Image 1: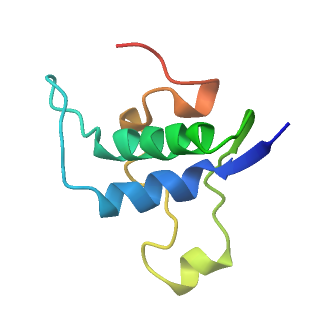
Image 2: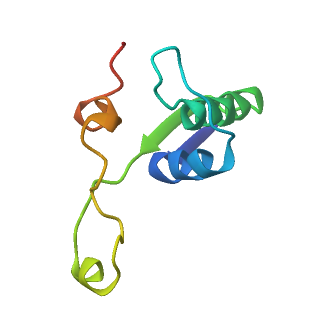
Length: 91
């Protein structure tokens, strides 16, 4: 058995900024999702048998007062498409 734990928030962030912009037919940005899925497939092709994914929740702290824009919840409303309530919903 080979178990991998994926930092889902980091991977989405990393792929969002690393991948060329790409939209689905409805205009939603999908490049980060494509990038993360490519990484996950690579893990399984490399021998992973199990995968756990951990994600962050927005937690505002004193750092938000020190640095403008630090891990704010801005833009997380409709753009998350259900990621915070149990999984991705089909569209």
